[in-house]
Image 1: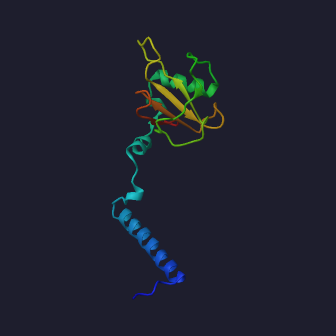
Image 2: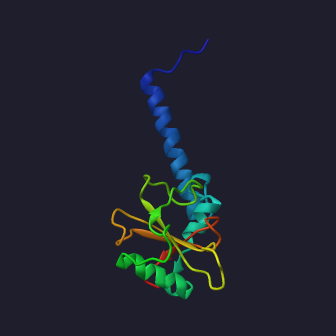
Image 3: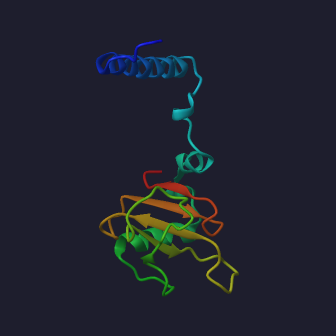
Length: 145
């Protein structure tokens, strides 16, 4: 009958296993292979491909300027809290994100285009995202480009 390992030996064995997995993951990254913990989900991958502010439609650029200026906005829903119910954006406390309509030429409704910005001060957003398909996908906005 085998004797159970003492607590100190169990701790050492656990430390060795953790170290081995970290080293294996580092070696995989060095070899150009992503271990499972380093891979991003499809939603995270989409969020990693930022779009330059200058690449957005002119209507979106105008809405972005209005966000920084505090308005005025065309639609009453502009500036309301975006709940992120779809969890397509990074998780933040309720009230962090606010949404704004990007007008679509020729559309009689608000259309599907939006800018969602997040931060403690609405006029100084920490991050903004653009969606042209009513929250199905988002691209981070890079205001420097």
